[in-house]
Image (tube, rainbow, N blue to C red; front, side, top):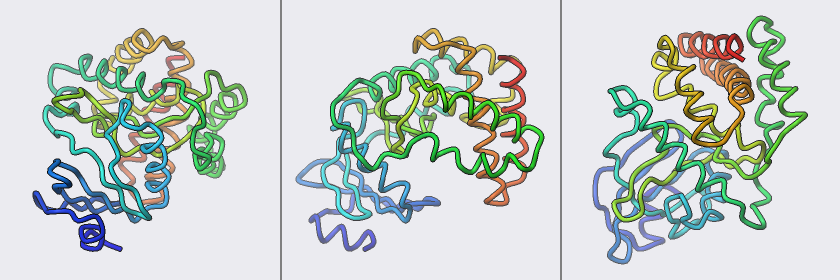
Length: 264
């Protein structure tokens, strides 16, 4: 079922132009007099994220109004101010602090998390396969295995916590959208922040050192362990880029991984 089907099913009124991403179709709508966003995904990964969104129940996340099949109706958040623009401007640290505050809300202890969440061992399977390529891939897989075998502070994770997935509600502040729905060590959720908002920015001289120190301070993390997770995650991201034939993004992701490994 596409956007039109869910519009009829949930009695929604269009309130803007449709948006198409690589994984989903979205439509700003009105629902029972409220501004909402309809999302219909083509990705199984995104459907698992729906389960986490429902479980969060609006605590640190956009509130879910309806869920069914590949469709999700949620609270509509504001795209401005954009954290990516802040980070690429002169407010990188401010954007990082907002991301850390959003993560704290997601990571609060709650009972009975969804059974559909994927473990970090499962999430890193493609890095295990890419390790055969040698070089940074192999180094990162060795790091990942060490971290995965000794996970600390395990809990449900967003799984894709970056500048584009934290938006603002005028009434409720900064909230997350589009989780992957994982479970594992809390520190992992901060690694992607350091690979964003762009890989070129992530590789800016001194940036990884500064922002990793800030994240460690804001989130109460061990900075060395955070950098190790960055090294593992950036190589996993490179594996995904290679699979999609995105060669330049893969090269830059490997450069982030190598840099992170050199710092911890």
